[in-house]
Image 1 (cartoon, one colour):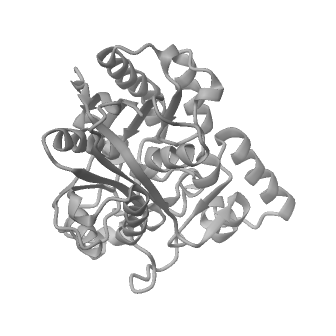
Image 2: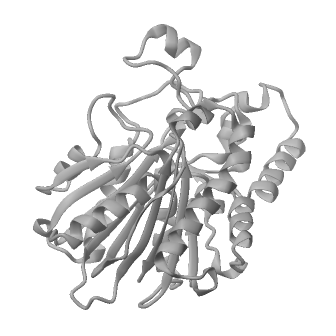
Length: 353
């Protein structure tokens, strides 16, 4: 297969960013205590639990996550935050940060694997909650959806749209299989958003974006229950995450490398010229492995998975927002973005700040 590659798209820039998380934050120990099914329901000593929690941080780099829902407990739609709620908060922060009038935001692109409704978009109610009159589109390409959305937004802005809103949001806690320790400790909830707008100075640009999909690999990470939902499928757990995690872990690094190579080649940028690498955050070792494959030093690979775990389509958006807040990116910086997600899709982009 060959990636679809676009760019450069000049005269566009990221003008504002925002993030949002549920109030319930749990470290590894608290998460394991909250979901005892993940440990087979066994009664473990405090020392043993602490050892497991510390081992998760050492091997995956994950320390904390925020959840709107406790996996394995009854869902409470009336009181629990949804992906739309988190998306709205992150988007409002991004628009305020960008200081753009609502009337300038003419395109809204949202990505999630955990929408609050089966048959409606998340982008349309998101725009409505923000009082935006915009063309609204969902990008359902898994954890890489935000990069597909960024590429699409850049094309719209370059064609005359004053500003576009890109949002990724997830509430994985509602679809985590409680018997899976890996899923319990590795997945979190959150949202990230950015405003992309025209840059009359011409200094900002999406130098490239590479996107690729292989639906034959979709079963590696999925919720395989058929829609509309049935009681039988709910009992079976068909609407919880499932797949082949070991096979997935074997494939993912190569997909990152393929997308990054295509994006760098299109941008005409060497890996050594990248000021900051900001990937989707699944584990610290994966970030390091992919960075090392391109000779990107560890101090140029941004990692925040310890704070939030894997927040899906929000992953690189949250990471980029936090990198920006920490002063890691600024005018003229060359930033490499990358993500791999269910579907299965993978993407990378090179942004000139």
